[in-house]
Image (cartoon, rainbow, N blue to C red):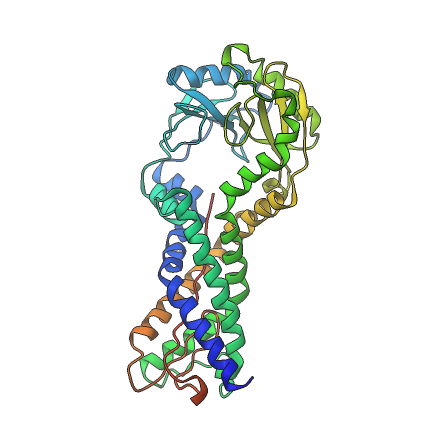
Length: 399
């Protein structure tokens, strides 16, 4: 590679890294507790669990469950109902002032066997909520998500440019060399390079899937326009089905289960909500395996007649979104995968922190080169002299 190309790549690497570093560091720090959100919930006593009963214990009707939940908030409408992946003895019912998307929601946890209200968990407060919101949208809604998505794109640019620059700037050192006998800055320089290379693939996967996740709201809107609009032509110009005219939700669920044998219920979106239509209860079914449990199959059931209208296959862009989530969260392989994700996240935090340290301590006399998952050398070649900082960020978590 000639000196001009090296200089161009170094410029791209420096500025893509500098712009996204602080935000990627924030995402790594907030993503770490989110990896263990279930375990932290148990420790804090905020995790809701149904009492142990024999597996053969009969379940009450879903209509009864919704009636019990709505009695707690009679002025609200039911938007969603869901069950935990590992516990079909519990229902979570989400109620809001209107069917429109909102952050003003109430949750009611109902025992699926007895109908007892176990809790009314507040998911919109506490430490984990703050971590989640900072990680997902910086408390700025869709604008915050898209901004973090752009930071993720800069991360990918920094990683690619760092890989390109690694060989020219590290050719005089053996791989993995950490010069501990030298001054602290040089040691951190080598450690930054080593951890950056070790976490390279993970950084790219987590960064790219995190970027895709920031598009979720837009992807779902496009899916409604692209796929659902044709299915809903017979219902055109009809208002949302009033609650009094709706058929049995239990019967609707039974029909959806029969349409998708071998699958389990993930969640239900009721008429007028962002994941459904004004005329349907939409049941999102999932697979039984750890990975396929993240791949959803929607089944649209007429809210009046409880008959299946359609079970459209997910388009490629929604499938890509759903596949990206387990790859990003690392929550499909149990505790071993969580531990691996946490260790890689910590390594990335070190890379980020060392990159910032190297930039702040670069000085005026010793040019420095640092990269995001790539090269950092104490003295640059003449063609690319000058400080080239680049902490390697990672985009993590979530939901």
